[in-house]
Length: 210
Figure 1 (cartoon, rainbow, N blue to C red):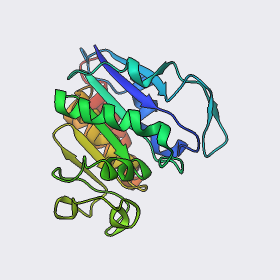
Figure 2: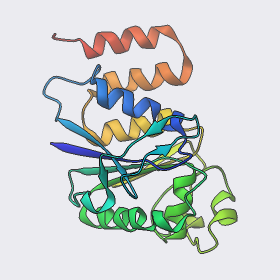
Figure 3: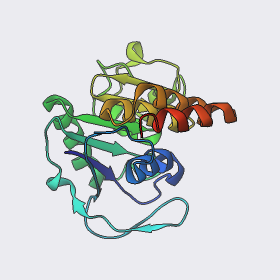
Figure 4: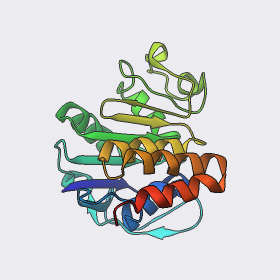
């Protein structure tokens, strides 16, 4: 069993989580024998939050309930409220997860919070373009590890910029080992190009042997 903890906070960028949550919840393209994946929405408290798109969400659990082990994956979406002190606990938990062999996947504004905590100083990563992290995270010292690409995986750390949600999702699904390689590549190709032939390749790969 793999547990995916989705950190939800006020002003979170709904669209950045759209692809990954849809695939993990529906399992529509999962391979035969894929590991079970449990989704848990986590908050700084159990109080409802409102996304940037105006969607109200209520956490299932609080940060202290995140299991720190190699079967845990923590999703950190972008938001305009990452600088609020109450989110420091989930960033600390992200550091614990990385240390324990778990996975942390951060996108857009969440990368700033990781950078400010020093978690990107020695790990390959990306964000919203060159200079972004230096601008918004004064203590950031990871410039030499920055890669100007849509998404980057470095062991248990997966990062992406605001426009890299499809690439980010591909890295996450690959890390969780829930899709066959061919199906995952076709999924990525379809959602990045819109070319229908990749959809049919995805459908064929996902249903091979069914």
